[in-house]
Image (cartoon, rainbow, N blue to C red; front, side, top):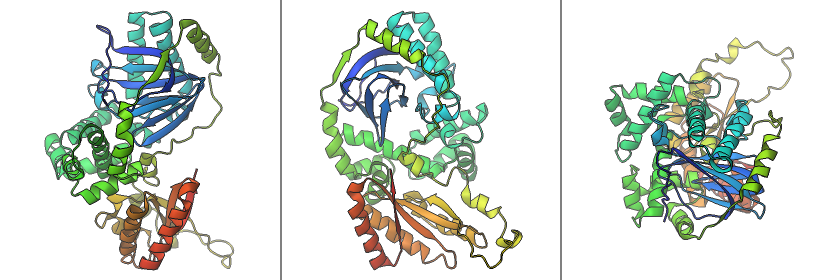
Length: 449
């Protein structure tokens, strides 16, 4: 069974346990945001299309309804916390709809709040397990939800240079809620705009300016995540799943899903659905051991010196080079004529690359063509970054890109194909050879760790 409903005590809005985790089934919580905090050992967390390898002191938030599984080593002890977000309407009426992004080593560290959040989570363990106090636990839970809602939603993850106002957050969360309601529609943007009495152009620009990624990217991500649940919960055909999620056809659904999960929908179902029936291996940890571990974590340095690191997930990769509207920015740079010439005019010109992630949404229509025209007269070379997502899917994407680039004209464009892991290196080489042979497109392979 995929969905695991959290049984809160009467009147409680939060639940916390300390457990030795060896493995869990693939499961999801329809009524809880889960936060796991590793007190000892290591923990591998698989959440939808993302993987996290956590060590002692790391914590990560797992969104409501997201399928996830946990796998720990022999030394693992983990605090597992659940928050009933629907019970916090006074904090944010959309709290249960927000997509949170909170990994200790990333945004909290970037914002200088890693230790603050760690302290809050350790307080939760104290008040739920070691010295139970329902009222004080509830106060800490509300403080935690307040902090998450005002600094760790997905728009905070991408728009790090300026914080949205409370009014902008409320408007964005309302738009996202309407998007989810109309997910199966063929024109979700029209439905959302009508529901909020805005123009389609206004909605599109507002989402881009507030969250730093496009309405179409957000919509595709939401559809893919809904499709993941249908693949795990039902026996529906790929055509039925595609239709229920609003994709125009099975081919587009398959390509979009593979961009996120590195597998076709059928491959994902075959691999992960059996894991929803896997037996858990989880045991409760005694209070004395828990107390020792919590005390050790409280003694940790309050201000970690490690630099923040991005969690390299599909949603990050899809937005490389798009944290702001790149094409609009490029248009404001001016032409090369307005830039002073180098002192030594005989010196060779140095190429400056501007990487931009290209996926299914960018290849659909002429938006990419129009954007590339912005580079004329600019001393920067667009570098289109395509992610390897299986032989056939990648060849199709590169073939489409090759056809578009033949229409660009005099703009110089580089194309990179990035992949992760040596195991697919030969397959990547075969794809590059095929695309150059059949479509005349030169592609540079790029391996990322």
